[in-house]
Amino acid sequence: MSRIDDLIAELCPNGVEHKALGEVGEFARGTGLQKSDLTDVGTPAIHYGQIHTYYGTWADSTKSFTDPLLAARLRRAAPGDLIIATTSEDDEAVAKATAWLGEGEVAVSGDAYIYRHTLDPKYVAYFFQSQQFQDQKKRGITGAKVRRVSGDHLAKMRIPVPPSEIQVEIVSMLDTMSYLQTDLEVELELRSRQYAHYRDSLLTFVEDEGVRWTRMGDVATIVRGASPRPIQAFLTGDVDGVPWIKIGDVPSGGKYITGTAERVTQAGAEKSRMVHPGDFVLSNSMSFGRPYISQIEGAIHDGWLAISGFEHSYLPDFLYHLLRSTPLQADFKRRAGSSTVSNLNADIVRSVLVPVPALEVQERIAGILDKFEALVNVHLPAELKARRTQYEYYRDKLLTFNEAAA
Image (cartoon, rainbow, N blue to C red; front, side, top):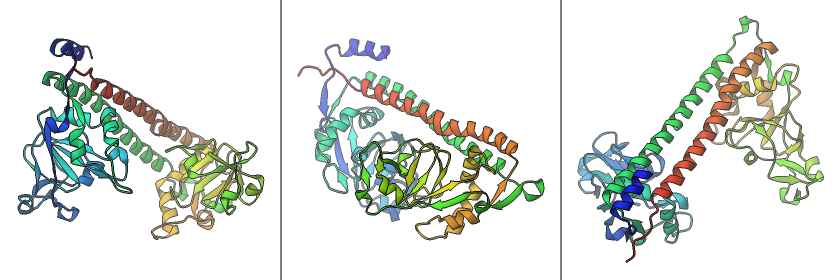
């Protein structure tokens, strides 16, 4: 940051002027472009929903196009403009912006604003991500389920306007940090695919290789959880209560259940189903078929299946990877049916054919897959989280200036 500090000392030693966005640009609402108007060829086009789901800080090409005759009647963003999604169900996502850096104009849908301005496009786009922008934006969000912010409110929001040399230097630093973050995201995606490939390859057996095949119900006890009702009558804040295991108690990508947010009374536990350390729980609707290993004594509701009594046939870590494997997950879904909401019952899991290799083979395979699993679910996500935190810190620091006296 010394380069930026030097530029500030040279070019604006008495502070940086802050201006309303409406002073350095103007907002115009997009018009008339519907999802049904999007095509694979034609004039470049951006629908506001794609700002939330597809585009990042900037874009120089579009995912979609539209008919040139329609585009000629629509409002279009020019190179350097910001395209801003002005509606969302999430306050933080309202006014998410992408700088358009393509060579020509791009048609823009309604529920989006085009911001034409005199600043560095990426500088403004990064400012729209900053905490100071978020703090100002919150005061102008309206609506109940669908949250929105108006162009009039955006125009009143204030942005620091340092000299262009400083804007360019800030963009260069944030671009570098963004690329490093993106590289890590790509590595995580590639490692995840690699883990899935090796898992499915290592867990593919054929019967004539000497591996025993049997039904899951013949080598494990599988039962459904139970829910005391009404559950509110059995919840307790007493430390002597029984941990009440829910899907939200497991971190995303997690393997183990180590604690719960809620507890139930002993009476509630008696109406439920108990699991013990080392038992598996398998989700039967949400996160369909996802296995977890319990490290606690707890009670499970009827959204879970419990798997126990497999110790003579399986090592826990091997069984975990086997239950997550693509062929077994596909078999679960096929047997559960093709309804909108698939439910995995105990009979289905009992009936699935599974391989039972020798324990020494299981140990070798589990050792390999555990390392991959830890990399994609623990180490890389932790590094990515740290890098995102670092990026957000420096972004907000770089975009914060002492304001020049009026």
